[in-house]
Length: 352
Ligand SMILES: [Ca+2]
Image 1 (cartoon, protein in one colour):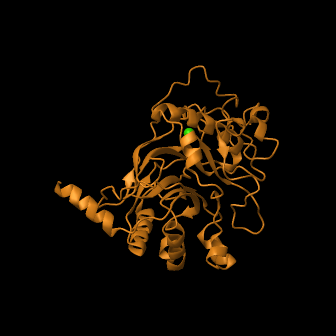
Image 2 (cartoon, helix red, strand yellow):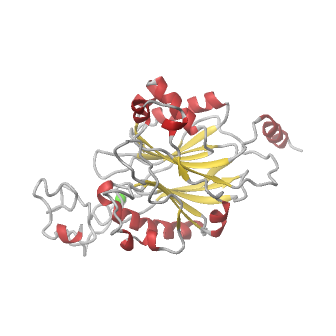
Image 3 (cartoon, rainbow, N blue to C red):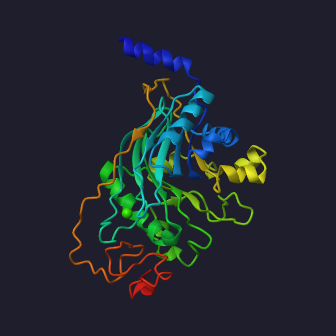
């Protein structure tokens, strides 16, 4: 037996065995340094994150990663475990941008390959997402399901219907990229209340698809506010392996206000969203093997491949297939605020 093997076995014995494998999606409303400098907020975030082995975080605001890395460092200090994080590009069409982050117990689950979904030509306004889905394949040691793909998304509320529909394309692309069916789409879909209504579902392919199961139902409330009851945050699963791996009745919102007996104001200081969570079957044959952990925190997920694309044949005076398009270079616009500035293309209302 080599030294490495001895080390692996030894670490395996020292680490507390995980009694569950939970995946979460959490929009930590405008996560930035202010949420970790407030020690009360930071500690509750740690209490929430430590429930999970793998978390997709949305709405990480700053271009530099200091705040989110500090949060994971504090999470490790508090738990004695090894979490690490995979961080997306800073995504958006304007100066307002967000990152997606995967936080994971790197001794038992690790990302093996990842990319930003190529959603079309940003230059021509024919792309489908304001924040392209961040796609990652994970390898997991302690679950029955050894490999699966996650697609993280935070849709724009204004274009939630078209973006949730376009997730079907991102899913088809991920199937081809990884030659794998076991794919979980997760995140803040904004797929409820005024952003996606019952009349919209028939034209959303991801909802009509027989290959997909929506594990968080329309009646769930994933919002902290007492004024809203909306299932914005979702899990949509495909693949026999994944669908049988999810333990029955474990997909739900985690109401941290109730769980930790927080005041309403304190709960709102954490986020306007609850996390949604689910649990996977453990592997009864798990040998205790663990992955080697990294001495450093934070893996950059690379950048979106925004090469100059060809706009020939694209009608820049029409909003057809260009909802959300905005650029000072366009003759007219198709974004939600064009009416306010009287700058919409003439057919804006018919298409967007
Ligand atoms: Ca885009």
